[in-house]
Amino acid sequence: MKSNRLLTTALTSALSLSMVLAGCSSDSGKPADGSKAPAGDKSAKPVEISIWGGWPELDPWFQKMADEFKKTNPNVTVSISSFPLRDYEKKVAAALPSKSGADILPLNPNLALRYIQGNMLQPAPEDLVKQVNSGIHQKLVVDNTKVKDKTYGVPALMGAGAIYYNKDMLKEAGLTAPPTADQLLEYAQKLAKRDASGNLERAGMSLRLSGGGSGVGEKFWNLLAQRGGSIIKEASPGKYKADYNTDAGLQTLKMYVDMVHKYKTDDPKVKHDTEAFQTKLAAFYVRESNVIIDTKKKAPDLNYDAAPLKSNVVSIVNFYVSSAQKEKADAAWNFIRFLTKPENHAQMIAMTGWLPARDDLDLSNLYKDYPQYKAFFTKQDLQAYPPVAEFDEILTKFADRLATKGFTDASFVDNPEKMKAFLDEAAKETNDILKKAGVLAE
Image (cartoon, rainbow, N blue to C red; front, side, top):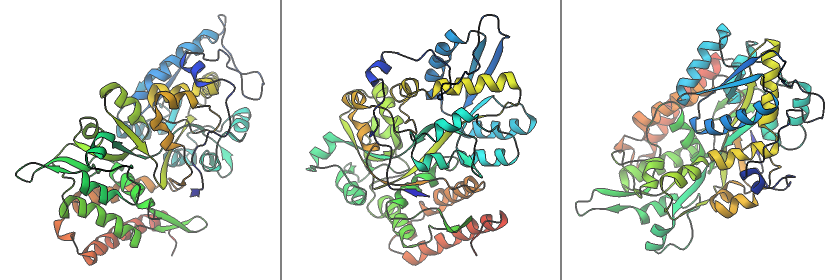
């Protein structure tokens, strides 16, 4: 699923981000269409609603919003709990069938699909359906709120990648421009540093070589997208097949193999990802926008910037409501209305680093303090998780193959036949999963 643009700042919010950062949260809980929303008062029956999440960095924003919301909804108490992402997903999977899940669940729409199909998540109220379709979100985002043309989710945030690079290291290497998506191997070779014994002291590009869950596969997917590839593609309506056992997939795997084993610009033994970048043990890497706020806290003096990718894999998260109890469901939807007011939703960027999945926010003041965000708001081709309930299984199993074989086998160097055989074997597993689900394009 693709679109020809990432989030833009074409529309201007009525309130500037400077007002947002000053804490100018709206105190109204009314729906976007002006109709009367369920609102608490001192005489109303107390209602406690819960929100779970797998992104602990969102907790301060949720808490601030809950405190602001309570000023005009004094009978409503919002409890907030967060867990490591994979634990959160397992917790949701165990709780929803027994109707013991949180009232509000931020979920990737791909994961939400199975719960919607099982009637475990509630359709969105009409005023929020209108809000979702009002033009503040691009089509890719809107499409991912629906199942069979019925809206269940309200866009919460989106993850997208950019190339973070250390400006001092580039200057030291005589490089006057940031790396592009087509120059990753070239720049990695120029920026890697070794000690007198040849041991890697600083990675050129820090790759995602290991880790639990599907993250390894997702990072591979984003680099694969730069060559026009994907993990699976829709070959006919509702039917899919593996799309990485191609020349694009071969070239992407070759880049990893060359970096790790041929040119040794990265090594599984050194620190990786954000920690490596922040501690100057890596010159550049690709990661989501939350790096910016995290780096402000952990490495405030780091001289770095971000450059856009050519294409992007977008991870969308929507707000969903699970409770069928009217009082709780009404309060939950009302809190979601409050969270997604422009002046409140925009605060999420400055407080957490994540991007609201919408187009109507004025970010000019944000750019003054954090110019790195500009890399995320350029025109790009987009891909999102496909509407296949088994996709996370597909991505997780492919990620495991990459981490245990694809990135560790030095015999892959200059051996395209062996790499192609590896990708074909993985693709067979992917296609078997699709076939079992009844969505394989034969």
